[in-house]
Image (cartoon, rainbow, N blue to C red):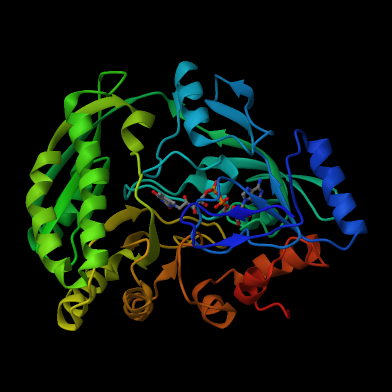
Length: 434
Ligand SMILES: Cc1cc2nc3c(=O)[nH]c(=O)nc-3n(C[C@H](O)[C@H](O)[C@H](O)COP(=O)(O)OP(=O)(O)OC[C@H]3O[C@@H](n4cnc5c(N)ncnc54)[C@H](O)[C@@H]3O)c2cc1C
């Protein structure tokens, strides 16, 4: 019996075994053996999802050994990548080849397949999520069959597989559309919450990437803008970076621990954090992948909803009022980000530009009252939960939110009629009998 747990430590299980295939042939062999023995398989990336997507007492498949870039088309700026490749390995490699991903989230620990399978996103109203940067996929199904799918070939399977929670099969290869490598400058500033929201249209228009870290219960945000620059230092690592690291990890950890022991101190803590935000104000630049990613050393739990863009500000206002009225104790910043709509069946941004509102609670501090209350608000605005982050929805709620819900499930049933890629959590999400 092996042991497995996710990044936050909130999900753990004892799978029968964890397997590490090194090639597509080995992936097929594992699937065929599992099928013969009536076992289930859950595939894991880096285990950075907060939800029990990977949990199983049967077989966990990790593609850590199925990693690397296999082919590059320099003329089209495209690369073929093994699905287990971690972003922190992929991005510096692409940089050396003169290419980069057009947008990324705020960490780089995920595997490329894990990131796309939950619709991982960054920020920027003119950019779609990471799943949209995948332009073709190779999928190994429950029959051990290999399906190539893209915008031109097996299009419906492709639209389902771009965000598929490991439920359609094992993605073994991903073709990425990249852009020539670029430098970014990041600028952080403490601002008034209402002022930042009032100026949002202008801020989104003027900045390539724009986001807000909001300290709930206070009227302050830390605004973060990312814009391209001609060149930047290739290795950030100045005293400013060390100070930023200390504030965002060490100091935040200290405040969170104070909150854990003295819950009544949370509002005071947030006020102090909002004042200390000035220590991380300033600019830094570097190659895009260095600037996108931040080290996140503190463990927390997270819920994130994608709310239609035109309703997002109202939802944030309601959340703010509710936190203040109910005196919800939070000592961790919320994150407000933006994304362009897409056409992927289960993407939270499907069919609409979105404001992503992420709320966090430090590990060890109860989160349920906060998350459940916030979820009620997000749902009033037709919010869709991030698949990798906590939520309390089930199939009956989810199918109302996704116009292509049935198309996804028809494909899932066709590719995996026996449900070997399901676990109890996915059965609940998808409305499949246990
Ligand atoms: C500190 C932290 C920061 C984060 N920042 C962001 C952020 O900025 N933006 C954002 O959107 N999200 C963010 N997330 C969430 C994270 O990006 C997603 O949960 C992502 O799916 C995790 O990737 P992973 O490689 O760890 O995949 P896992 O969590 O291991 O798996 C995720 C899903 O992908 C499936 N999967 C993995 N590999 C394959 C494969 N080869 N074939 C088919 N399915 C597969 C799994 O079965 C599972 O359903 C963050 C999470 C943490 C812990």
